Length: 389
Image 1 (cartoon, rainbow, N blue to C red):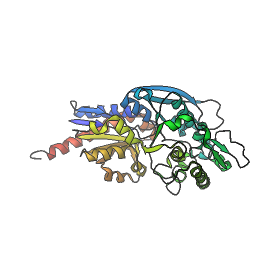
Image 2: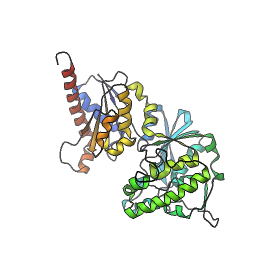
Image 3: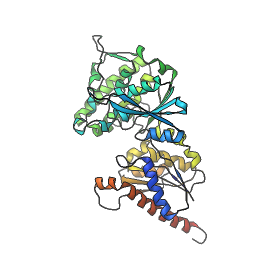
Image 4: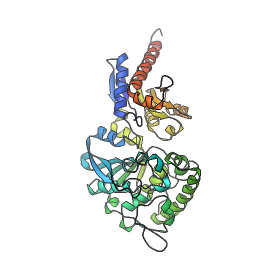
């Protein structure tokens, strides 16, 4: 029996590769002779670089960049994956502009910047990469990618003509009256920049980045209202200056509007991150002849149906008629929407009342135990469907 293992990471507990290892242990308890194909997945957030480097072969380099809080004295360390002989660079904006880099007491997307992400793009271009894949999940920012553009040479000016020199945050966007793009890094014009997003939210409105993700980044209700007004004003100026209409495109609201900023300032192409990883890993070929796909992530809910890993795996598997079971840490409202995308079943790995800390600590053993239970059910189904069943 051929089984494909294609999970995302369980944030804060296990990497996607570690989840694959745990799934393998559980499956082998029941089917020690099974043909197992492990394909760690990611959707533009944490683990995207590792997944693409593993799928394509390559190496990682480390780059110093500014963190999400302006004024931080110590730079943070970002990781860039170089694949295809160094012609393609891949990195996750979260490694330098991500929420975990902001202490809980200081989290407020009015005060964070994507400047370090721009520094990472510049570093990749300076090394000769002319195709960039930028994962934009897990951000701490809501600055419309203006900080990113600033680090790449675009100038942002006040009404009196003076330039904003400090890394720009959402709060400082109200000071921008004019944009001068003439200093943009020259290699951008000769590069293909693809953006791997994990959610398809628009920039503004009730499904926009401020309303949906602002509170997760520390914004109060009043902050969300303020952020919405700031971004609405800023995108008018950005679209007029760059002559690109981006606010309504799918993924424009990803990473606090970084999706919109990358499209407007750099002419980037946004694609669901899971689609990029599925292509690079050869997933469509790997599931040929498979009887089952096991996927999973820490939580499945309504947001999963907006472009995350489980949805991408289920949709592609459905086209080839392969059932997909998702093993997850928790099941939230709206998870049932995934059944329309080809997901066969959702199984929680938590066997009973347990604290989050204990569940995360016992993650590998819980995944293995749950995979074993899934295989017992699957085999019972197979036997029942056979001759005389």
